[in-house]
Length: 284
Ligand code: GLU
Image (cartoon, helix red, strand yellow):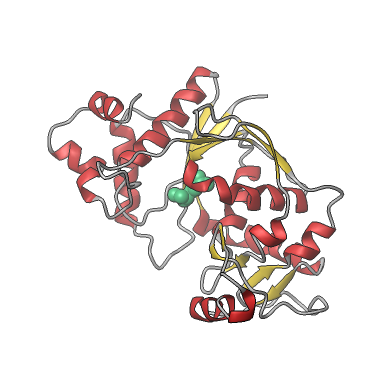
């Protein structure tokens, strides 16, 4: 099996030290294994993606010394694929339309009889307001859609699991069994307003279609991985090995965000830093 990994940034802002660490680590691991490192552009959210950020991503990664095969996949060019997967899930009665806004969900989830609202990988766990008793019929609607988690789990012979190869002291490793996802994850959104698909659905299709064998990404995505593994099971797609790496933090211990322009690779480049300096800064 050839080792294939990827770095999949969203072109919604500058790459910072955390992205540099993730990309360098994935690239180094692929090289050590004689494998392939892909760059993918996660531009599903067209309202926030900008061509200028994409250009900057290419430029920063090449400056860091990374190389990747062409063509580079863009999610915005793969919408028909995501739609066909949604159609399959819809036909199996696993999806339903949901019109709830974030505020609706907050209000319903904090209703006194519901107890303390529970957080899932995507924020508050959906309280099930729009979930129908029987699966909706007809053609796939062009509406925001959620996965009926209970129904989806019931179609599987056993709860899903995946292998985590993260090696740090505070990382879970080994075979991770996913239990109780109806409670801890709930009905996740798989098609979002104005975006066709959700990040979870798109990334699962992209990883499978590109033959990714190793997903190397930050620990902040650890809880999202269970959604991806579940979707792989539902869609009969292979599950890659997962390596969730430590996060690069600022001096106050907060994880870096796109708004942290001070730690943008472009800022360090403008200050005269070299790619080796960036490697040292992230501990590589
Ligand atoms: N575009 C996603 C992000 O930047 C990619 C996450 C992933 O690697 O799966 O968070």
